[in-house]
Image 1 (tube, rainbow, N blue to C red):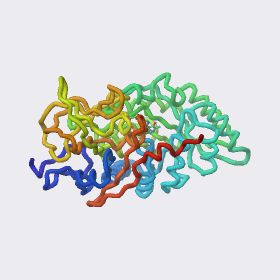
Image 2: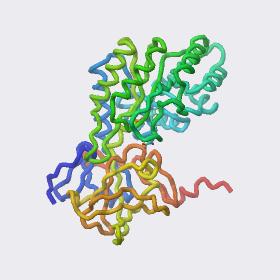
Image 3: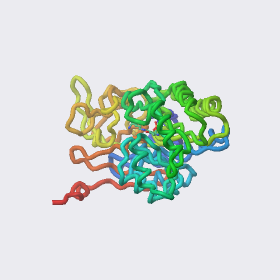
Image 4: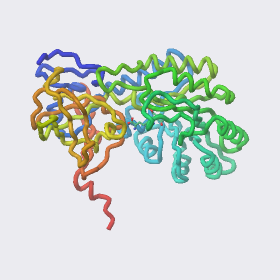
Length: 421
Ligand code: LLP
């Protein structure tokens, strides 16, 4: 096994195959991580998170004076990630009272928090007002009614209006949000009505427009079209242009760079919306996906028509293959060279669809081997669950050879901890 082999761009920045021929993430040897912290485990390279946060900020700073980069925290809602991105100077988008609670615990200044949600409860709105969040993003007319009532006379709350621009990007339907008849936001005519209403409100201060057309998008033209679609709504000081930049899940995937993505959005905004605006973007996946890998242990190798490599996790730690048919890579953490036997990496859950990676080549997989799936930093921990009573994995941050657990593994007692009778 070549000790110096380069890993593809799917792996966290700074990852390598070390002298022992093993995967190293954040300077930490994957087999040692597995021994010390157990498997499955989410392993995250802290420097990768920081580098991408800086890349977004630098790409914007090079093109536009007045901007904010918001961490779309649904992609990786853990206190340590909130803390890291707050320290990097990012703002934060939260999609629920729970994410708001975590963002505050992670140290985000309330003024830098934006509350989203297509079905916000009164309790969530009250929580946001009490916390003093900077902006609430209006998604529907009920938001306007409730918020006006809760803000009360003599007070004021800044808001954005989420607009559905009628653009359908090329991505999975489940993560497409800007098309006509979306459950999110207000279509252009309704948005105009909401804008009129907000402009005459003495309690809600309309600052601008928000759009987010979807996620895991490679085609930059759809972002441009969405920005052009909102140009006729009037002039506003703030435009939140959403997230959506796609990432590489396999070595063959070539998503646009952060630089190209920002260039496309900023250029379209300058042309369609004007230059003297505050521009916001909300990256989630592209900030965190490639910073993380999941380590599993192989429990069984069953050879028949197919070779099923059964691991100790699956759809409880990564729902994405089952929900969206998402394609991942896998490798044995100390035999990473391409080639080997054609395998199906099966999860441990009681469903035939629980296959983590289809049709991947692995070198002599054996029970006890550590298997890695890269690019699990986004929407993995976020969507983890306890199906089949499987405890959720820990999150381990790695940096310069030091590993620290930032979310501990769930225990069996945790599974009983909400019992109330
Ligand atoms: N802003 C808003 C309002 C959003 O709804 C989202 C994602 C983002 C920003 C961040 O988008 P990103 O940069 O991550 O594409 N669970 C799915 C993804 C759902 C995305 C939901 N909204 C998955 O695992 O692919």
